[in-house]
Length: 146
Length: 442
Ligand SMILES: [Zn+2]
Image (cartoon, rainbow over the protein chains, first blue to last red):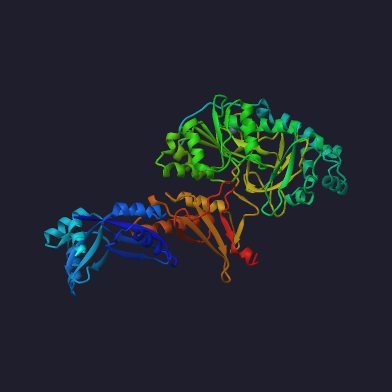
């Protein structure tokens, strides 16, 4: 049920996003979602994409530092309170959450939350037992096609 | 942490001469040197001013009555105004690149060249070189003394040489893989570059089979030694020299690796406060000053090296009787004065190496945007240190920050930057940009 996420180190200067994005588009690789965590000094670009292995090679070929981590995708109704319900489950179960971000598929009324847990396997077990809709990568990228 | 042990061997019996006999020899040779330079215009003038003649040198303390020689003095008599023999006696000219324009030249007679080879052989043998070894030289062969000096020393010992010279790291790697030298000679930073290229090609540097390395040509740190030795599984030895004194061979480490033995039968050493020029107490950092005792073509009196180090005359288990110098901790001219504090780039390097996993690829930028000096240390990010978690990355930055502050006593601005963006240098690493100089502020 885990999804591979690529993280890319970026300096904090103008135009820095264009290097990874151009490299991926030139290789014809689609990005499902990207999120940028930022400080005054540097940034971490997080990417979810289907062809993550190829993407990693392309990015490293462009001189970037890349690492691969496993994240958990959860689908919730795209309405007020949708996120809050999931967060409450996580908090009550005492699961360590490092960070999260969200995206939608546009037309649908559902949102996908991406979570980076310290222990993703344990987190998935707890979330599923509480009836939370954890989305696997096949389903996630299948959905993106429509 | 030594991967293996080896026997202490002494190349030249002169290295163990008892102190009293050594000092008598030094005095005799100092007198001869003063006589030899009497017709060199710079010294002739200086001696006339202070009434010095060889006969007035009665003890080694009289050295302090002799004038200092600086790099600027050498430049003033460009190209060969310090020559003490007729030009037909010269067999070789070398030079050291100045930071500005013309090099300063030095010259050797046939006997000087032989002395030089013997001095290099001494430290090479002290650091494990044996006649059965194969040695790869990564120094440039040219005006720079590093390549030729080590080459002559290795030849003298009877070992075999791959004179691969500087540049083209993949080729160096190929030669090491195919010819399997046991010994590497060059700058320490270049060895790390070889390791980096090896890793990029999926080769474990430890599999290369290098057992010893002799490094010189640039200052480095004890932490860097640990890193290089771990990376290659070898023993790394430090040696020191500068062309104005003779080239490599002025001093080098023995098996004890507690400082570099200065070849005192050929050079007199002083360690002085660079401002007052008074001697500093033993063990304290000061500028090293050398006087050659046997050189014929280019004898030099009290040459100010601008290298900062300390001296140690305590007995060494290797039985050599000579005084040892510490690593060069800085240069009087790359000492940065930041908010009134003396900072050496080597201290910043040491801090970076202490933070586990930080590669020594960095750049120090100094600026004065307002009233205050600011140091920015740019450190290249490496894949193994990169985390997708912000707090891990912030912790890395803070650790670097803290180590630099604990060593230098000042706060700096640490910037993590993209890998492979800083220039890789082959010779002396140039890792400081002082914007205050461009702005005319210092
Ligand atoms: Zn010793």
